Image 1 (cartoon, each protein chain N blue to C red):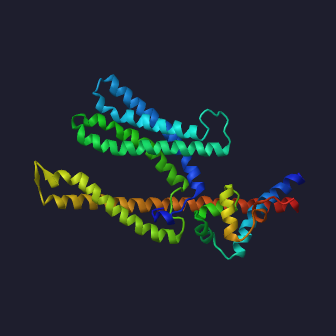
Image 2: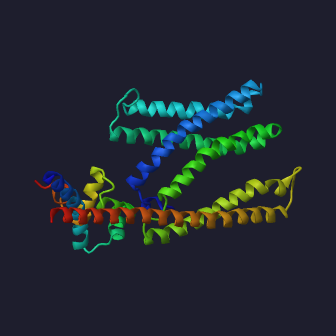
Image 3: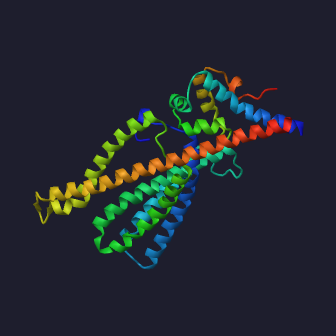
Length: 77
Length: 242
């Protein structure tokens, strides 16, 4: 039960990290989407965990938010 | 969406999602083309009446098989997500080959095969059924949109230009008999060309803008629902931990 909770917490945090990074860069979803070249709805779906971006899109997001892949998308131990 | 190529959004999520029904519609279109071909052959019509079906089937199938072979997925039974994505992309392109060949071929045949007009009209059915399915899905899933306010501004400008050009072509194509017939040029036919073009253009412009707006609204609803669900899940986890 505890493991399941931790897994669920990690899943939520994984997507929150991107949102937190975006807010720290003072970017709206629309602004981030424009920077990367996707729709704002896609950014929203990635942040809410409903869409798994490809590695190329992950890299574009990291570049736009000045973060590494580990910081935004790698699971915490 | 309608902006300059360099400024257009290339959203992998929308491409992946919209390729799924397009790939399915390739199979539907192929089946409808085979049925059309069968009916025309059984009715012993001349070969030129079903030449378009044969051309569409051959070209799209050869393309699909060749591209699948090039990507090494022709004979693979088990496919992971990445291979399914590639497969759908190839079949979606094959469907677009069928679509455009039917759209232009039909116009050419209507002019060339006037005596078989009603038979050529079967193409409309083959074209419209899959296109309607994809249109409804596009609207329901919110796959079409401007993407951002900036894209909307540049997109609408480009869209207007394209509608004007398209309207002129439409007016010229449909109004040509009024412009030039019996070997003589009729200046009053220009009014027909402009009138028909303007009529179609205005209708298409507002219809398309309404369609895009409705689709974007749907896309926003889907994104918002996902965000609300994610927030609700976090609250549940917090409750469990307490």
